[in-house]
Amino acid sequence: MTPDGEVRRVADGLAFPNGMAITADGATLIVAESYANHLTAYDIQPDGGLAGRRVWAETPGDHPDGICIDAEGAVWYADVGNRHCVRVAESGKGPSRPREPVAPRS
Picture 1 (spheres, rainbow, N blue to C red):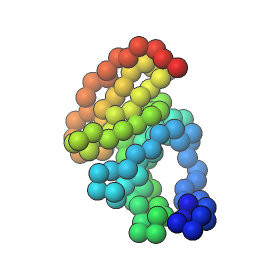
Picture 2: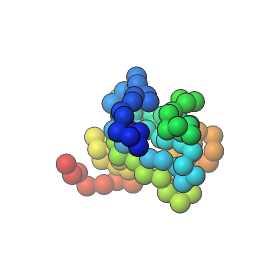
Picture 3: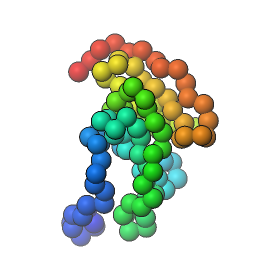
Picture 4: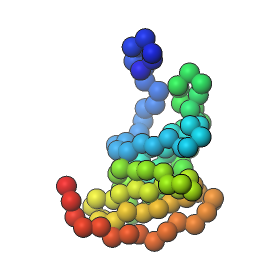
């Protein structure tokens, strides 16, 4: 939504986007695509549009849901079906941590 209240679409073709986070520098939007088994990233443009769509990290066997970014710039995502949370760094930019089991919740 623009400051004057206009609504515009900035992305499409996402497979059940179910969590979003913006990097600390405000330059990148990361989206959890639950049905695509990966995190997708976009460059945020000065006008609020998105460009440069890319896979930020693969999540094989998982369905990333809610996400947040930690102080080191890695993403934590919840996988409700598999009952764990996972920390992943951008593909090729650092190690991931083991899965952290969580109790079932709704």
